Every structure is written in structure tokens, then in C-alpha cells.
Length: 309
Image 1: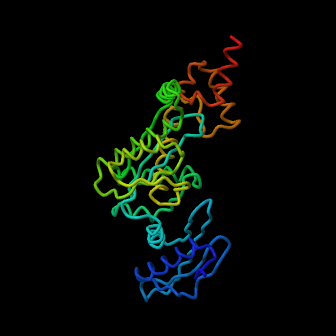
Image 2 (image 1 turned 120 degrees about the vertical axis):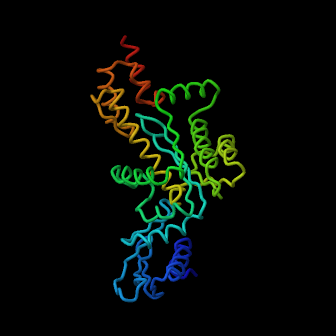
Image 3 (image 1 turned 180 degrees about the horizontal axis):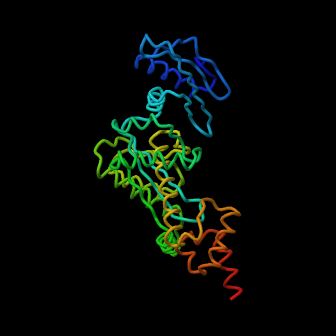
């Protein structure tokens, strides 16, 4: 029987958290843990006896979203997040894969001893964060931790050419993603000697694609996990990749589109309508410079226009 919860993973983590917070000098009462929907809530006392202030902490866990830690204390957040990732873990994730406009972006980020201070930031899977917060955190990482990550951006023109070459060889987007991840991983491994493990957010079961990434790790063990963003190293990679994607959209809007249009993420109706307006202004040739042509949105418009001409 689990000590804190019927969720074995959650209960195991809380046991580690309890021990870790005590070791860090916090006052933690074992009888102060309360089960809440999808999580455990508790209060901890200050590390200084003069300060009687208590801090609220909640740890959530689901199979779909993994772990989530909610607390106002940056030090507590850092301690708990560090328990979700081994020091020296290199996380790798991508952004832009499902978006019509802009590039495909892959980031590999190593969470070494120096990077542990970034765990004080409220970082989680970028899909659960606001764009404004993503860009603010990225700026802090870019200025102070430039050797901690590698960002591989495949801008639309190169992406479209790359994709066409792959399809001619009977390959697809999976192989393009594998190449980008392998490039990002090898870039970090080449400049850091403290990488102990590589963790990739799993996007395929294709053995050839996964082998390409594994080969880039220079013998360091590589794991492929679904929903790997619950690991802080992958979450940080996710945030950096998303920031790189958003900044690229801004760059394309300002230069290629001459600030006449602002590109948006996604692949829904808003993207379709915007793409049509851009084509009316710049012509069909603009698609190659701003969007992923193999998407159904682009293919439909290109086909319709050719039929009308």
C-alpha cells in the first residue's frame, strides 16, 4: 500500500520530496500531507526558525500530463523539480511541427549543475505556458546560459526543399525531425562534457530515425519517452524551441512580409484565412518563404489557384 496516495508514482515522489526538503533544512511535518484531486498538498516551515511563515506546496500527477509542482517559493520549486531529472540530463524537443507558418525548430538543452538555478523559474511544457512568459524565460536563458543549449531552425524555404528531397527518397517528416534532433544533440555534446543522459520527447517508433539521434550522442545513453516534457530538461528545451519558433514568425512577418501581415501559430481556420490574404498581396510564390507547403492548407490553396489559372 502506498504511503501518501494510491497513485504509486505520485506517492513515491512525495516520499522523495519529504526527505529532500528535510535535508535542505525545511520544517516538514509528515502528518501535514493531504490528498487532493490528482495530487498531494502540504505546508512546510521556513529554514530559519525566526521566520514562522509557512509555504503551501501542491504536487499534481496524471499519466497524461506527468508531474506539476505549484508553489510560490522558488527554492522549494527548484528542489522538487531537481528530483524529476538527473543532473547532466540533455533534453530534446521541437516546436512548429504542427504549425502551417514558420520553421521547424528543435532544441537540445543540458541540465547540468550550473543550470539548476533555472529550476526556480516557473518552467513547464511550453504548450501549457503563455507566449509572453516563454519569451521572457528564453531571454534569461539566452543571455546567461548560451552554452547550455543548441537551437536548430529549419526555415520555410529550406524546410520545403528538404521535405521534397526526402519524399523523393521515400522518406517523410519523421526523418526530417530525426535529422534536426540529431544535429541539436550533437552540437551540445560537442561543447559540454557533463552530459550523462539524453532524453528525447518521443515522436516516432521508426528505428532508423531513432538510431540517427542515438548515433549523435557519442555513446551517451539515449531514452525516447512519450510526454517527456515532465522532465525539467525537456521542459526547458520545449520552452527554448517554442521561443525560437515565435521569434522566427516575428522575423518573417517583419522582413519577408514587410510588416503587412503578422503570422500566427497553428493550422486552423485563422491560418487559412491569413494565408489567402497574403497570397492576394504577394502572389503564390510567397508560400515557399513563409509556410510548410505539404500541409493540407497550402496544398489546397496551391491546387485551387493552379486550376483557376
